[in-house]
Image 1 (spheres, helix red, strand yellow):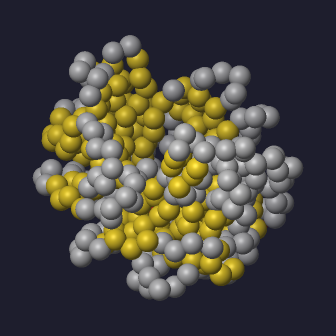
Image 2 (cartoon, helix red, strand yellow):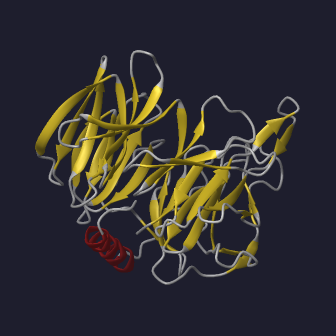
Length: 366
């Protein structure tokens, strides 16, 4: 989720920073629950030196306790306009117009999605929808799935529909790019295809992959692993503009990445590999993070990162700095690291959000 027009992103970042500075009431911290029985002692870990975050780094926390944290001082603030009932969770995505929030409740499987504006307003976007921002401007593509088809509507930041089109099957928009709207589409064969579509009409411009698991989508390329591969799977990076692909080998027994993020300059691809149960769930091999150099093909492990079983570290970028997050049921840990200086240790930041192992995420704000 995060690379849109520089001007629009700058406006969004300034607005969010203003909110954090002027709202000093901290997010209420709940009583930590007991650790999950399946989580071994000592996991998760984020080992390194205690340090403040770089100036300007604010992180957006999703889950049961959504918040914005200024990592330079460790101060947390509520997300403008977001109100949750007991037990609800919010998945959050920063967009140029504000923050897209998808709220789920334990009492129903339905989701509701809204655009939260910097002034605290909430613009409803629908139920059971997927949302991505346009590559330039503040509009949003909103995909609503129906029986056998998906309707995609381009909406303004005020919620007004500008245009719409319908595609067959189940379509999930992944990113709007200068090459077109990148989507995952499942048709009658029940096989996921990654495509680049004309964002105005939905017409297919290019097929990028078939039967691939998306690890990361960047402004120019998408990273995937084959759905049929089990171990030591190469990471395939495919360009949107011409469909050209390059395979990158991963270290032996490294496991398959679950999360990923391209650096803004396109030099690095950060990967989060989840922890794995072994010996009938009696033992856990901790998850870890690594960075792939897309020029030299070298893979560098990020030191000090260990995530729980079936959960990978969160990875995002703040300029050339990698931002990491690991979660347990009682706390989250946030750190930074630079692949330009692989010998350094992780800087563990004074963020410390409340835990929500299964659902929480942390993402660097632009």
